[in-house]
Length: 268
Image 1 (cartoon, one colour):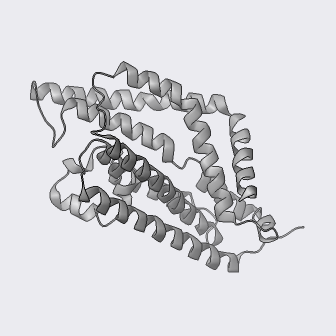
Image 2: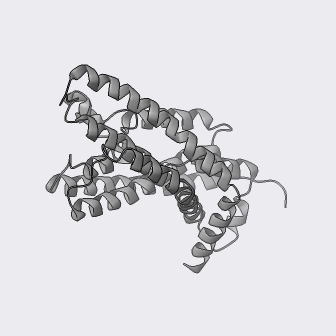
Image 3: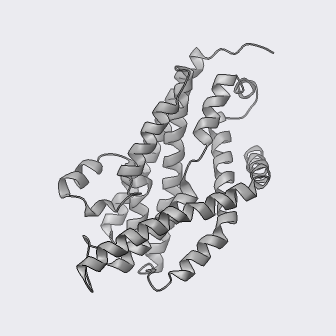
């Protein structure tokens, strides 16, 4: 394990070199959030005092989008899939075939280092934003709910990474993976609850999405925090989320094992 801790340490040091980029990304990332909140403010204004959209009042809707931003900061895969695909195309993975280090865990360590660095840089502006909207921000019902939320966020991060890693493995078979990555990103943005809470959709749409991993990439941990899932629903959801993580890990392993058979790198 020492070598992987060393990778995380190096990843944090490398990412700190670009801390201004992380800060700029965090600040500008709040712009779409502000725009979305103004859109919902207009929607609720038309509904009058105490108006609801699905099961959400205005304060809960504001909290939902703030939590989406927080969870996204903790779990989003930014450039890892592009970097992995580039390593395959450029032949950089040859080093890992000759050394006692697993490429998947190596990239996972770099992903965790990147998320930790981004959170450290983005924490202050995000905290100030939450303080500014403190009158609308809803706290979790109890500590047990907060604990389940944190467990779900960890599973979300793993699910995000393994799915992106699997997508990057397509570089073993195709020269350009950007189309596939953009398709996956579009599906995630629409079906994970990033654009709107999934429980405002018709029951049939919610039912269809429940058979996919997308709700567990964002919506599910946020719904735990807001108390939209309780008791056995949380346990059942966490088990499904863990199952999707294991399935994504298995597919990632399978894609690597099959892809490495086709891999060929020139040079010394």
